[in-house]
Image 1 (spheres, rainbow, N blue to C red):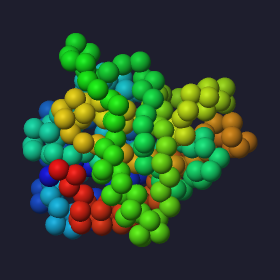
Image 2 (cartoon, protein in one colour; image 1 turned 90 degrees about the vertical axis):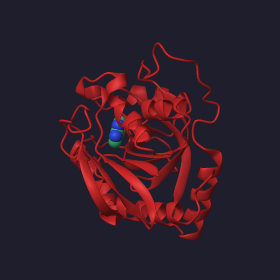
Image 3 (spheres, rainbow, N blue to C red; image 1 turned 180 degrees about the vertical axis):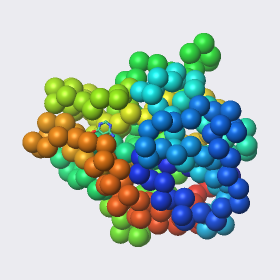
Length: 246
Ligand code: HPA
């Protein structure tokens, strides 16, 4: 069974799933999200015959929750028997070659949240945070489907304010291609449970200062909705077909 976390505006992915039952975050004992566009339920079902749990909506550090709370969904899905995790998010792009509206598969991340879900627990290796074999499957499938799929480094910040142009220049210097406010702690949690992870950023906007435009949450949600289609296609074909690195 595969756990799939849906980011801002990507709830449409749920429409590709044959639903068996739903469990609300409340029923699962999880904190609920207050942000529009982040409905909180787990959807059990199948995607092209592959059993999945969709985590629709997630909670964020910027809502005032701690690192343990925002990763509770990953632990809950693992307890339900999920063996692999797909994370999706909305992110700003700071790579001039990665235009808004396209997708980036994470090759690596920068955890700039200042925290970890593992505080007080073990040391874990993150040399390969995002599963190499699984990424190769997605890369091949995207090529076959002619879906542009960038690969790059995601910087995860706490938010909720978007970045300043100076911060974006700093992130560029640090090697980031995209910036967002989720994902990194979920990856750390999943890896500490031994679950392979792949993650995808829907690049919803140019990061601050790259064009003259200002950023807003509405634009992020709209772009996410428009880009959801190709990710549905990529996930259904890749997860449906092959995709069992072990
Ligand atoms: N910055 C941070 N988070 C985001 C952005 C951004 O530009 N776009 C969508 N999520």
